[in-house]
Length: 250
Image: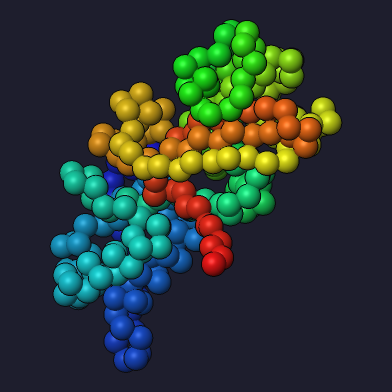
């Protein structure tokens, strides 16, 4: 996430005759500025001391407003940086879909950078994923950086059986599942695990984040409607930008 040179000072008018609490009015005004694009991901908010002095508020009021915005995933507080605007969180349902498709469906503009492309024998992380892999199977391994509206969101490593014959040129538009569907592959079932951890130094660099920063890591093993292994995906998402919805039934 880029960091603006100077904190942004918003023109905020509070109605002290309103029954709506001042902290809520302040939070609403900041959220409206984010929605309108007046504040963009990476922008820093005016510090609490300056904000409360300028608006005639108590500091706990400002803290409560910022906390409300943080709970919504709109801002994050960072030591030495201040309060920084986040990109909108990607909320994904627990279903077999691609991040690219989910971004488009939510009105975001996805971009993809191909970081590496290799063909070779199955790597240890592929062999340990629990899938039934035939000996000698070669895999296409691609590593990509996914951005949403220009903001780095995820690092994606995908291992695909080489019989799919996917080339670097095929990956130009970034939509892997759409490419598979165009070749008659009907994705049927996937087994996915989700965990949380700290990012590595390289992951922080690629995702433009500071160390230490949390991430959500997923591993997905995907099969088609004939039972063939199609993909083993290992993705890392910036934690403040990603959530997963799961429905539970007794």
